[in-house]
Length: 277
View (spheres, rainbow, N blue to C red):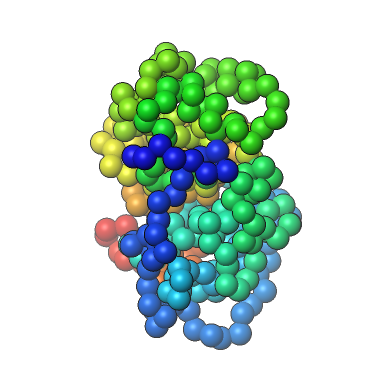
């Protein structure tokens, strides 16, 4: 990977103007232009997307999408390739500006705000790829995650080393020497240096062996235990839902199902259409 970074303190996103190939759909594939309904949002929601249309250039990907994240939960976004899952995260994080609708963080509209400003407010983002600096040590990677802070990083770094002992053991090693699972742990920890209360995670288990993926999912739960709400995209739908409180099933850029994670796993239609039967 190229070792470049933007003002968010994270690895730069290398998506081109056409967007992620897995998150594109044509204008005929989304929701209708029917009247949009007001959706009740719980008082403890920390992040809300309401009636959002979004996409890349002239290609619309999200259609009238509404969802929310409470302050103590993990939610998992699942669905087929091209459903718009990663586009939801990029829109929430300011990498894409919603065409219509709103993105609110603690009630404040942040739709289209610069990612570095969203980070400072308390939202972190872990992309699927390009999420660590391979030529830097683990300690240097973590410090890069705190470039937007103006205080002493020592206390938060020590807290993260305590939470993720493998990073402590390898803190002077180059990130290029880490396994895929270890890189994911570093990427998670790096996003936590800014002490976000919301973390957006894109495909944490992508490309990992099953046992390593299980370890990464356990680390995601550890992050949630640190009072960080998590909105996670995960292609391994069953595993993702098993560690989540609620789930959203996306199809053609809009929400097809929303429910408690356990209920989605028990929903015959969801199982048949999206969980491989």
